[in-house]
Image (cartoon, rainbow, N blue to C red; front, side, top):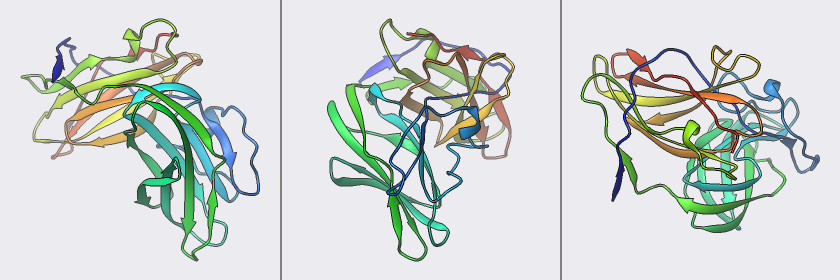
Length: 243
């Protein structure tokens, strides 16, 4: 098992953004680049009409595990389940109208579809979209800092050239208790250092290991560890490199 050991100190501020595909459904199969308005207060905002909005991953290549962020709006009632299907098989499902979690798939090209299932049993699917997995970071680990804070072992500021995705690998130590979750925040233009920032995802436990598409926008990323007592510490803000 490989271990990354670049160490980072604490910081201040919040973060994120990503390529988004416009709301899609069985009745509306068109897609267009999403704007800042498509990002909700957390994760991926559900569409204003019945169907599914997709905010992560973007088109192209990515490492696994990658972030899948989608929101759903029911046609005949509230959304009960969000499902992710890959290559004709269901990969995962969550209750509620928000699917926002890392997804692990083997190397190669995969066709994904997100399905929203409402309380009446009716469902709508996103337009199928393709993702090509070119690598896997699951075996990379990051050691939590000895003192309370966040150790960022791989940040979006360190992506190699000609790469369309960013990988975030980090670990946290609680300020006043055990780390309950790690939060990923993003901000983009015109003032990416100061926000406004939006939370893109929660990660249970004290680690983050995920890849996501943040280009072509100029963006900044920040990690926050939140402990069991509600206290938190932020990492510095990392400016995403346009790879």
